[in-house]
Image (cartoon, rainbow, N blue to C red):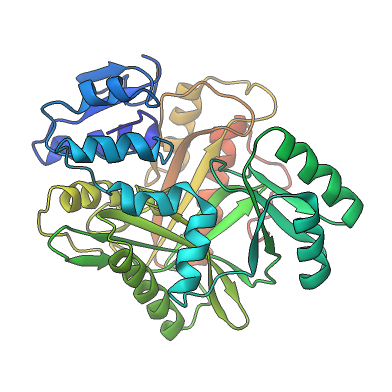
Length: 386
């Protein structure tokens, strides 16, 4: 696995249960997966020779991020390295403009969009589709980074000019009026077998996912099935092998595709405890062409809440916070990533299962808040929007 973040760390844990050995390419020895995996290579994923040496003797090369240069992957594929997902598929997760153009050609619902090569392109788009609109970096960007709201022509001209001068490839999209954000996560094997977990709702704060509700509440059953079918169709037509996450806008007119990720994804961390087969095991099954596991729910409701670094240092260390958490919520399942705590950084996640959202969600929120800050909120609203 190229990359050694928390996704690789949790994939490593799933690999052990399958009797597999996961080799990771880390940027530093302190990366989350590098702290636990036996076979660790430290090097740059942007260097072809490093990738070539790393991939030698591996059965399959896969990823926990989308940033490996496509030209390097094509070179490795030409040399006989088995890469899943392949570079022809992965480019749609690497380049948002390529993704938008391909999905539009497939008649998949996407927001109106345009490439931006000058400030005038953005101004023309805003005049046609209305202000505000959304400017995105075509490559890179996650957790709210690489996204800018363009509210006025004057502001748009300034922001676009600065980004283009810095060499950032850009596209602009119409703001989508939405009822909420959803995610459809599926897996596909080289044999062509597919599996889809139930549609989930994701809750964002400052561009960062803070909660995942499984299954998505208040979504009509036919729309939930349509989301699964759409994600499976995209996996087939783009020839994705492994896990595919399709981030969706839930609108009054149906589902609109926002982003694609071709790897395990934050919106499916809940599957470790909340599904019969976790996304991490399923990704391994898929890329190794094993029969896929059941994606069925393990409980009527699962809520996953991300643990984010607090603005101020917590009064208690993480081990003591964990101690108190388990005393209060013995059924909580915690995954810590081995990361230093910084404001807004994902340092872990907590998962709770139960029969009703009204019971599970408040406890998951309180658990994550405690783990982040080391304090129990005095005026905590369990039914608010975060």
